[in-house]
Image (cartoon, rainbow, N blue to C red; front, side, top):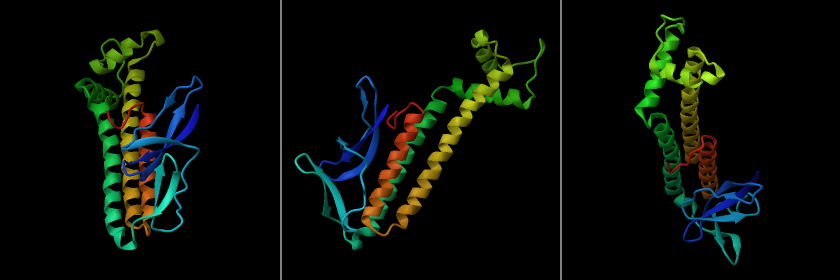
Amino acid sequence: MTTYHFADVMPDGCVRACLPGEGEDDGSLFVPEVEGSAVMLDGPIDWRGPTPTAVLYWERELGLYWQEGATEADLPAIREQAIDAIDAAGEALRLAVISRMTQTSEYVRAEQHAREYRAAGYPEGEDAYVPPGVASWAMAKWRQAWTARQAADDILATADRWYALLDEIRALRLANKEDARHATTAGEVAAIVADMQADMRSLALQINTTTTE
């Protein structure tokens, strides 16, 4: 699999982010979701512009080019816009994860049963009570001869991965917002937002979901 890079180009030509995409050997290509238009690039973007206030643009005839944009006086407003964008990127993926975790009461109930079963010490034997959410998963895995304990541990391992992902989203969101608050140039702010959005899309790919689900 080959990694490609795409520019997120807004209607006015301003480049908002550089995002990764994947290409398969069969010629198929995964194009990342963007707010504007996805334009394939030769490689990642170097966000260090010619001046601290330069803004990156793209046009079909010119390709990527820098143009003077915001002044230092505009920096507070740029920071606030960046913080909003970072919050939006984190919230979109957070809601996608929560949707997967709680899309049916069945998943919530199975996790509850698994935690109760583990807290009880994984009772086994003919007279042992195994909660139905655990027992049904063990029965489904009869070909692998899973025990109720294996089923419970698997349910909890899956749930723990979702919680770990939520923790990672929070950590990235908070760290990038703080970086944006202390950024000293508009170009630095743009790079922080681009990195945050790329991180969110990378996490979304890892859980086989998208930020629109």
